[in-house]
Image (cartoon, rainbow, N blue to C red; front, side, top):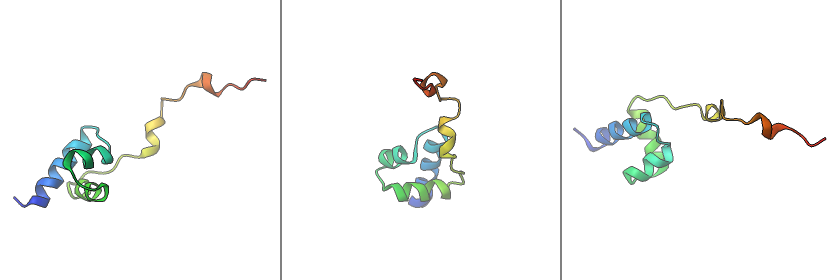
Length: 66
């Protein structure tokens, strides 16, 4: 198995387990861009970053002091 294929498999596994791309890059000792390419090469679709906040907003924080 080629080094790039092993990297892609490991990066994809870590990303699917919930790590962010930056965390995957740090764990594997590669650049952010390399981690993104490896994750994509591993056949994984990237999460929508705007979905991080769905269900995590606090309505009480949105109140204005009128």
